[in-house]
Image (tube, rainbow over all chains, first blue to last red; front, side):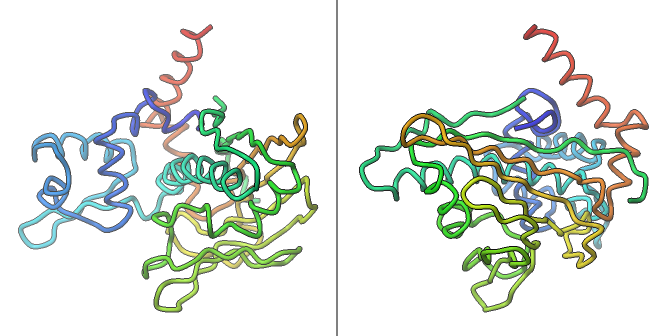
Length: 116
Length: 160
């Protein structure tokens, strides 16, 4: 929906990377835990995590013998990126709900627009 | 403000086949029916999202365990054309009660053709939130965000 986070524009343009980001928004996780939830390999998860870490969206720390990854708690960047996805989904659902709950109308989901 | 550089706002627009009055009514009064419930801040699973009508109204989530987590307040309430609410969840993913450190969401509702409307949403002033300095440093320091901006500029250039 904006300059950052859009498809093809970098950090979250990759679907797997966005999926990892969304999972970490719910709870801190190890590479294995992320791989268990996704249709990609452990090395692929590690590679995406490295990119997210270098972009400042994710931080990692050791917990015993495991490394735990989570969204950067000191970052408005991570918050803003998360909100970008939130608003994109929310406005789509808002349109559908408004039209579905107003008598005499049919849904027109193709009318959802995004601004550069 | 703290003098930090601006962080780009998030913007979005939707066209609706409903009158502008109805659009405002659903956006505000029925926020719980359209807000995607997987997106919330509190620890407990989300039970409902509440936006209290009128200036000063609270915007918050209520968890399935009854706990409440504030998101912000209503700053401007001008049905059916304009709504401004704050977003006070900061870079530490915590509610900050200080109104000076609030980001803002403005929603503008415009009548289109008969029975049609356009809703434009802008979420802005991220730099006011605590934790905003880190992203500014990243943008200005040539980190990942600068790379993203480069990518964006290229995309814009390619699309002419």
